Image (cartoon, rainbow, N blue to C red; front, side):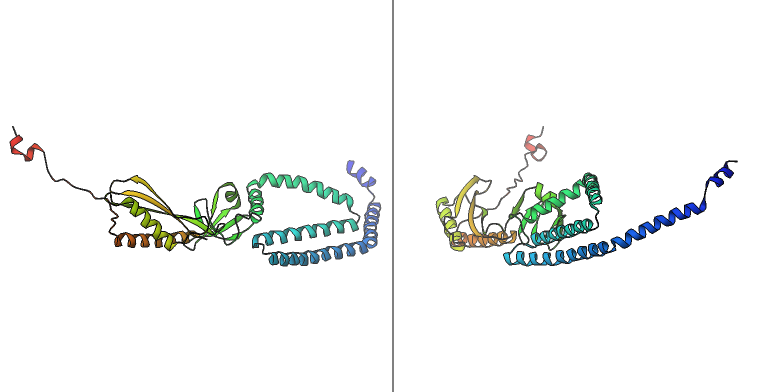
Length: 301
């Protein structure tokens, strides 16, 4: 009974007419707005092309100014995105989709909040990468020590920093680790002080040793400006009187310090040998005298 009533109330012809009229309305709207669609598409494509060439121009300007690669890469990417977004908004305006644009922006805010909560670590690395790219204290080509690793900075991206160590292996460190942890940059200063530790025998003339060491290092590594070779005795050791000598040299990486220390050790050793100054080494004396009663018959009962 219900099925018959439903069939009587259902008019197939009227439904088809309604659908057809709706489709015709959409077709009319499409035809009327076709010029706007074409114009919006052309504007969007034009902005993509403009973004491409604008990024190239900015890249050339930054190259002439000597900006590092990481700054150029991030700047060109940001410029591309901004110009393309402007073109997208212009296209929506030509289509009279201002309400849609408002809805998109509102939805983007909600989605951005959700994505930000879900990707806190990734976004932290991204913002840290932006900071590192514009940070003058660390640049591509610098030799740094950080997070237990040392090497030359070969790449700074929005996610991580790549370091090539002295063993020619690459280490990838997240940007947030670099920003949160202290790092040492050997390249940021052209001159560094190198420490040389040594010791001389107790019978040595300490004042003569001091003067000889300072003269030897000053001749090998001439001081500049207010620099000077410093010499201080540090302790009475087990077999020697120990001292530390500090001198200045050109340093751009950790290897330069090793080379300077190597030269200093050779020069000081030759100077000490020439002047009969002894550099003692620990000596252990073993006493084989056995006082046990089992080996001494006179102490037996």
